[in-house]
Image (cartoon, rainbow, N blue to C red):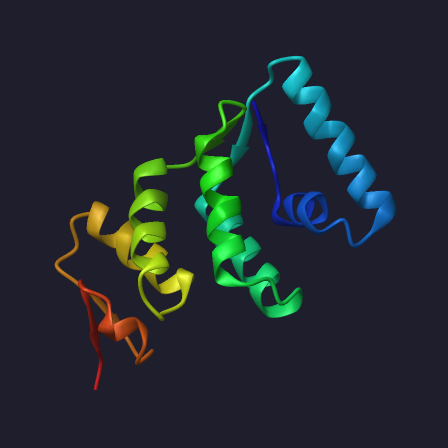
Length: 132
């Protein structure tokens, strides 16, 4: 198994740096050909979503599509896929940030009663409350 860092995943997706994109592509293709499992952490996905949205102006639908493709790939193992699935489901049907849904889903799976936040959008997520 090989873990992918955010910058490798972003270069692979955006191809905004030709040299790094080529290296990322070669590595990923080699792993797939040799049946070496690629592992992506929730933190990497959280950072990747931010980069794609805030820096590359990728729309929400494309980000969701990308994450679903990674999650459904037999060549990729996502850390705690059930948490990603839950976060994506809620993110897809609302206006809060992906990060908020991912945090709430993670804490719910850790059996927290709720998540406290100063983020007004995140506080609207079921399982989160605004700290005032």
